[in-house]
Every structure is written in C-alpha cells, then in structure tokens.
Length: 396
Image 1 (cartoon, helix red, strand yellow):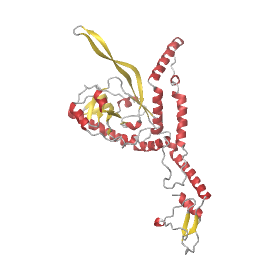
Image 2 (tube, helix red, strand yellow):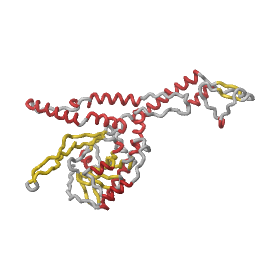
Image 3 (tube, rainbow, N blue to C red):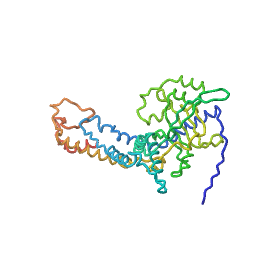
Image 4 (tube, rainbow, N blue to C red):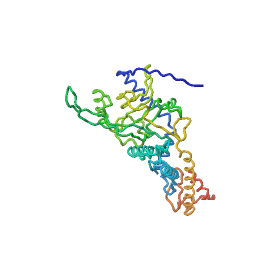
C-alpha cells in the first residue's frame, strides 16, 4: 500500500510581540519536557563518565584500613575500543571513504575528487570532532554533529553610477564545517522521529542548548533584540559560576555566570494555526525570541546516529552499559578478598577492661586489624569467634 503526502506551502507569517513571548515559553517547556524524559540515559551516563575519567569515590572513606582497589575495567575497555575505532576509521582522512570511477577514463578525476574531499576534512579538523563524538557515544550512546559553512565577510569597492565608488560587504563561504555536539545539550521530539526515515529527522523538532555572553549576542547580525530587552538583560545580576560542577547541572540553568542560555530550535512547527516548515528559532534566557526565520542555507544542520536504541527513551544506549554492574561486582569481590587478607595477617585480640579505658559509643565496636576488643572481667561466657566477626564486618 503506497503512502501519498500532500504538502501545502504557506506564506511565512511574522510574529508580533505577544507571539514571540508565547513561542519562547513553548520552546522552553519543550526543552524541559524532552530533557526530563531521558533521565535513565543521563543516570547511566553519569556513572560511566566517572569511571572513564577515573573519578570514582573511595570505597569506604570512614574506615581507612579497608582496601580501595580500582580495577578500572570500564576505562581500559573503553580505551581499547576507541583505539581500535580510531585506527580503523578516522586516523587518516583518506581511509574514511573511497571514490570509485565508473570507468577507467574517469579514474584520475575520481582520485582528484578524493584528494579534494580529504583536504576539506583536514581543513575542518574532522578528526578532532570525531574524537569528541566517539567519546560522547561511549558515555551517552549518541553520535551528534552540527554541520554548517565557515563564512567570512569580504569588503570590496564597487562602482555605482549614481554614488560613485562605494564599499560593500560580500559573504564568502570558505569551507564546510562540522562540530560534535554534547548529547547532554541536545533533545528532540522522539514521537516525531521514525528511525531510518531521514525525512522525519529533517522535520522533527530539535533543540540544541548552548551559552553565549551578552556581547556576542549584541554583535550577531542575525539576532534581533530591542533596546528595552537589552537593558533588562544588562540589569540582571551575575550568577556565580562555581555552583555548577557538571554538564548535568548546567543543562538545567538558564544563566551561567555572565553567559545566557540560547535554545536553538530547528524543524517544522505548527503555531497558532500556521504551519512553518524548516524553521530556525532561537530563544534567549527562556524569555526572548532573538531569531525566527526559515532556514536560509540547508534543510537540516544536525546529524544523529546510534548503535543501539533504548525502546523507552528512544535515545542511544552506551556500549559500556552492559558491563557496568559486572565490573562493579568484580571490583567489590577483589576488595573483600584484600580485606580478609589484611584481617587474617593482623587479627584483633580480646583483652580485659582492666587494660583499656576506651568505651564504645552505643555498644558498637569498630572492628579493624590489630584492634584490642574489650570485655569485662566478670564475663563467664565464651568469646565470639573472630572469623564470624570478620564475615559480619565485610558485609557492611
């Protein structure tokens, strides 16, 4: 059964002040909702990130005698995986792809075309961006890139028959550009995207979050802010930057130090009965629409990829998730064995209270190697076996 879709082009309708306030609120709510819907992915990513960066907490900070061995299985596994991928895929631009001629007479042209593409990849520093993207995949399970063009302005003098020579600005698109995006700051409407259907990804509403300082916002010719809005932003107090310790905390902020949150929306949008296609809208500090236009250059600037997809969050699954619990259990067994060896090498001893003045709080005896365990002289029963005490301690 074939599927027929009829699209009707509608005239682009500009927004008034009230429309902008309403749309800014709507996009901000979408960001919050879509971000909260993938908390299970972020919980796993937080665990993996600590292990990859060798930033684990100590096993038992209060009892220093206990072993604190870090096997670092997640780190070594990921290091081996990434090294193999780097060697096979992006260590050299020429091995990332091939250009094949349709016949012998075009072989030279195909080789020249490949050299041109390799030069372009080298110029956009694609290898570094692949490094970042693969690290993101290892932590979150998502590959995400933002593509655009490097552009600069060239000033030239042109003759005008009415005004004579005048200086004009010409935009020059120098080279394609690629940027790896942190999945923590990128969300989309998972109900609108059907995996494998590129057209649904192009039209799907997507939001990319970043932070910009006010000077960059003022100097960006694409942004429109009234003097009243600028004065309101300048009057706001600067928040401290030391309160934010992780990307996850940063994802919940609308202002960070002297920088303001910018939500970059792309996709199709139905707003107040009007259907907008291929729209770019940018929201500043969850209050102001500073840009609202049809995408002027390309259909979709974002590229996303996965190896496995979570059926609940519709986001990627990290390849390291499957060994998290196993690595933790193995590390715990190694530390328990080390604790037993330490206790056996220097076991605690029972002594009469005549030799000790130490009293134990709430009747709790802290058990450790070489500890003298006090008992009263009037006690006539048998002493607990040290081996059973060791087992009880190791379970804590």
